[in-house]
Length: 404
Ligand code: HH2
Image 1 (cartoon, rainbow, N blue to C red):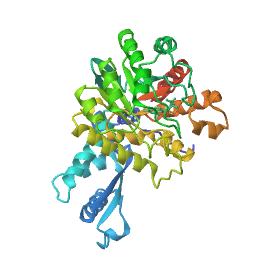
Image 2: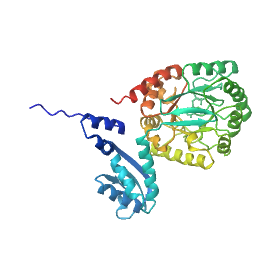
Image 3: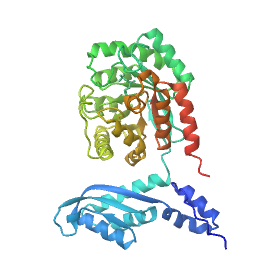
Image 4: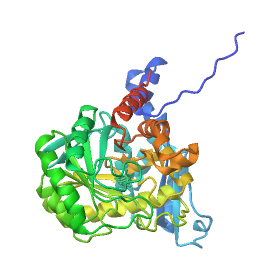
């Protein structure tokens, strides 16, 4: 008798599960019920009061699944616990339904679980509205081309820091496929000193005035200073790229809200001056996601609509090589935040350290990291080499949507 043929099937999306169910000839009406059973997910909930953690554990066991809690929860020796909820999408949906009317904050947890599942059901297609321009998020990854107007940026300092070189470079990047142009007047490389406000304005404003009149694509300004953001927005910029995620200038959220601009919130440990002095994480993804969730809430409270917010894990900003690699490998975890994910790997030093190569030799390393970021679900990529990375992104995207 022929040996039974067993193989693994790699199912990551509900639509793909439905396809495989069809292939085995399962009843069409059962697809809707069975597809959520084909995908297994693990959710982590931080710091739940122990009665809530106990309820989750019991409900998941009753569903034939499980949840892990801290050891002292069952005996009520610990008051709070993180919880790992492990089950199929179907089981997680039933859990959300069962705890919806329960006390100890479980009603709010139910809403959150339902939000995460809803994102799995219809992944991330939306529009980002920024001051008259619209970016389609989730159809294909978008390219943000870097235009550094600085004499000292780590990879292209001094190349485009004059108006007559910056403007043609921006046009060239758009022709090469840039969907956004990111204009920056201050280097934030490790150890960099801040520059005076006047100097940053002098570098940035004339360029964004020209670009906003000449370009069709949205322009972002890479600054953490509210005054620079305000003047750049008045000059026609659409997005503020704040590497401090509203931490460095109290007035920033108000400026963004008043101008109805889009805003990038980036994670950084410390400041550019001190961020690479011995950064340490217990759990790098947990720390980044918790920080970004908190800053998203702050931004919303200041009147910036969620539909205008973008998050960025801040590759190289207060991270060790291992942290940067982990962030890229687990980038998809940022989707839980429910807003587009931007990532900037271009020519950064973690590539130099892995490959032992100087900054001018990091094109292939940047390409590999960019391709991986795309397959892990990056919505936008901040790059210097637009022509090359546009090809990399298109190729990686074509593979990541091919489900068979
Ligand atoms: N990286 C740099 C600057 N700004 N903004 C976002 N949102 N994400 C990033 O990863 C990011 C960023 C650093 O790169 P670069 O602008 O080329 O260098 P420098 O800071 O030296 O000008």
